[in-house]
Length: 369
Image (cartoon, rainbow, N blue to C red; front, top):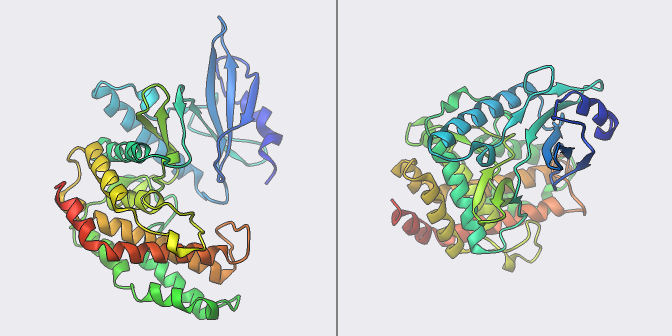
């Protein structure tokens, strides 16, 4: 596909931004979509800003379905936020239509674009440098669950099919081990055995969903701190962004992915596994904040399954890293040989540490029911 800059002027002309843009520059640290910030001067010296993105064709095969999800969810959120006295322009994303109408524009090279209002006076942090920031993200994602508690999750498209189907992820790992296309299986027998020994675990949450114990929810599926905008004046989490992976799913998965990412202090590819540990205090802090934001919208069963969410999202991520390593590193970008295996090993260590603290984790969630 051509570089996004080659059709950028065409795309700018396709939108009515209330004036001519005097700059459109690459923005943010995302690696999936091509993202630009568009600055438009207004009469009187003020400026309006917008986010303009070319949707990744490699990651998202059905941009029509992706945008239908985003439009429907953000419009629903805007109504709920307004009903509760909030400011929907700042507390959720607002899709801007092109001149031709609809929710996206296709350029002459086939690239699909969308635009959002820029949320002013906010900060996007790449890491939870303090417990307070980690808690702020927990309240934001808990509130996301509360605001969407009555949204019919089954009506959403799966923008990435089987994204958190842990059973399917394990099946793919087994296939990669059997095929062994790169001859790497001999060097990661310990990691393969670790995953296969937890085959029954891979069905725990999915079986609870099938049995009606856990309800289907609208889930974000990428609940890292850098997908929350923080108000630069108050320090409070304001707006959940990056809604490309909003799909039907389990609330415990959103919780669990945050714990996997934020409740340990090591790099995802850390080679010294002694540095990879679950911080139980951060687990407690995030749990309290997430449930505070959710304000009782989760069922007691969902709360009790929160430790399973943390364990399963970590185990699943490890399975994905190991599968990619065995298949030749075609999905996750690597900067050095063996990086995906190192990533898989950190996830194994984190799962093992969760298991070692299992009674503590369950005691923490019990006190919040």
